[in-house]
Amino acid sequence: MTEPVALRLDDVGAASKQHEVYGVTRIRVGPLALPFPGNFLFLKYLPPIKRWAPYPELTAAQWEEILAALSAAGARLTVAVTAGWVERDGRVVPFPEKFPAQARVLRQGLERGLVEIANHGYTHCVLEDGLFRPRLFSGNRPYHREFYDWLPDAAHREHLGAAQGILAAWLGTAPETLVPPGNVLSPKAVAAAAAAGIRFISRAGGAPPGAPEGVTFVDDARVVAFHDRDIVRGGIGYLRAQLESRRGARFVTVAELGRLAQAAR
Ligand SMILES: [Zn+2]
Image (cartoon, rainbow, N blue to C red; front, side, top):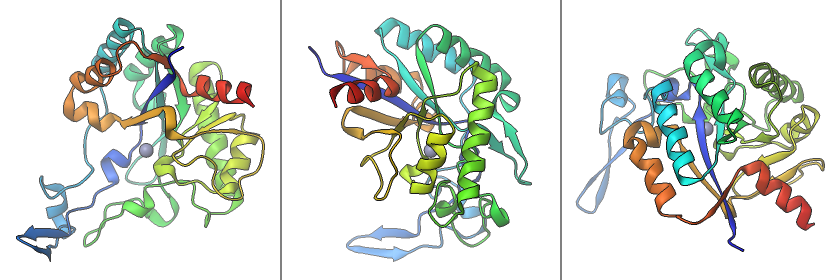
């Protein structure tokens, strides 16, 4: 039987696409990599100096196209959604409130069995002290991860509980799969995730050292992970190419990979 493969699309609803701004800090000139002030003021917003953000959220029309492409290929997709959109002032707006049209289409995709919705954190970033905001003179990439070990237990519990609550209210049931932003994961977050109903964690490298029992880790051996940014920039052709290059594959969701892993134990 063909080996299963899971496609995973990350960063839907993550405000890091607005706030995670950093620039090129070295420029190649022949054999030299010269320092370049790519994080200075506005320079980090200008292509080709800007490296990640800002870029727009996928629209409802783009989601319709994605569902049509999945359906045509007989494929499924795990969509990792960040449950809260962080406004510049630090307010957190639930995904279905911030992006109601996209939320409707995604929910239809779930009902049609074309997508799994996974938890991609509550904020995708550190909220404390406004650390997520763009800086005037430096990049801010380190603060666009959520489940750091230096954060207290309570922060992990609050973020995972809030995310599961928003996603369950939207979908009718809470997600079973967690995709930790940027693969950063504290054992504290693993315990909090298990308590919040998470059964599977999708992460390159699998379990972090010291992770407690209670969840099944799905490493990246059979997961193809990409970002909404890839489709925003490459169009639906990006997804079609992913599907085309695996024609005949057995597409499953990340949760299904987790269940297969459990059954094999
Ligand atoms: Zn992410």
